[in-house]
Image (cartoon, rainbow, N blue to C red; front, side, top):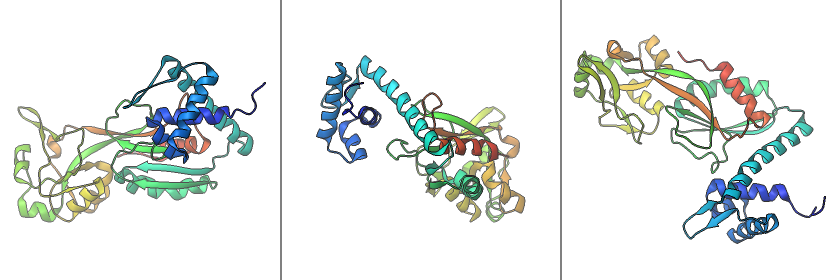
Amino acid sequence: MGRLDVNRSGEMEVFVRVVELGGFSAAARAFRMTPSAVSKLVARLESRLGARLLNRSTRRLQLTPEGCTFYERSVRLLAELEEVERGAAASEVPRGRLRVNTNVPFGTHFLLPLAPEFLARYPEVSLDMVLTDQVIDLVEARTDVAIRAGSLKSSRLVARKLGETRMVIVGAPAYLERFGMPRTPRELEKHNRIGFGYARAMEGWPLKERGGPIAVPPVGNAQVSDGEAVRNLALAGLGLARLAAFQVQADIAAGRLLPVLEERNPGDTEAVHAVFLGQGGHLPARVRAFLDFLVEKVRFS
């Protein structure tokens, strides 16, 4: 039981952050330390363990086989330590700040309306919500949970599926009265198609044509940063938009927007996931409660 002067969990936490952020400088900023202090801490850790954990070069750090093993076990141990401390201090009661990053449509139509109920159920939790359609790095942004739509790239993140939403092309009655209701996918080329100002996995709007499936690119005189901005421009009569059904179902029911080319809609859907950092199911109580709440409450039309 010797060496009580060694803060082993602190060393593990710094080492894990160096790996996840990709360098000493980034980890130093996260811990408000100097890069040299972080480098010396890792070197001290390697000396104590008698093993090299990182291969250093001028451009990047690379884990050694021993480093990989130590990193994976450190992540599990730190998660377990956090759970032990929370369990002893709060009997597993969800509490503390929960940082959530969500795309704007999900945040507008689901998260914000559900927030009062979640906070009433878990009064010791506080929500810190950021709405943006830009994909963020959860580690760098110190975010607990992010909501992402569409296909997921492979990563260290764990994903929990919340459902799938149907996609639909819509236009305002005033716009369609002025420019006409398109009857075939080819006729979309004559219309203003509102798009996004950043790269998306899908390059065009998928539709069924008699000769087979086609994709019509969203080409028009306006591009915006998020799905709700697209919806608002469509409501203003600027052009046609392809959006998630949950975004526009109330607008369609009220006659503010009309579905376009539904008979040519291939029925494609977009999956929505909650993604988070978690190894082996070890999650803070506040994160687990939030994920369970979303699965319980979120329903896509």
